[in-house]
Amino acid sequence: MAEKDSGTSFASMFVGTLGFTISILCILGFFVSNFAIDYIDQRIEEDCETEQGQVAQVVGADEGQCDEGSSIRDFLALIRYPLLIAGIIFALLALQVF
Image 1 (tube, rainbow, N blue to C red):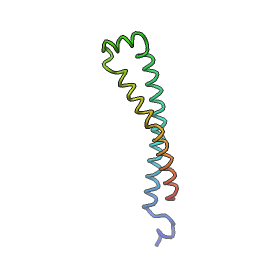
Image 2: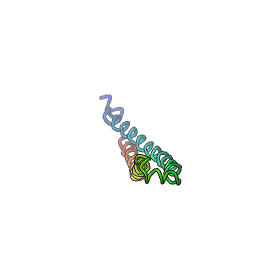
Image 3: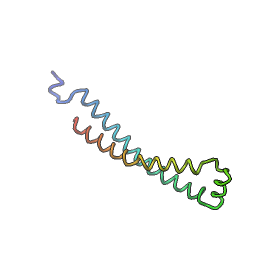
Image 4: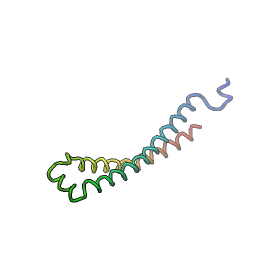
């Protein structure tokens, strides 16, 4: 009877807390992916786009790191906005539970 008087049950508190936790993680993932993209862009500019870096790519001395960095950067660019949108949606859903 005490649960009905308080207005919220343990399950709704758990779901709301879980929703906010997932929301925070998604939004944090958005910011981390932005920082990672900037870092990878900087490293590609320094190591791959110079004359020495281009020679290393042609010879194979870079062991594919420039291509791998570009593909990771492209993947992060692809998922950063869906992470932000998912974070906002989870926050809104968690607010509905409370």
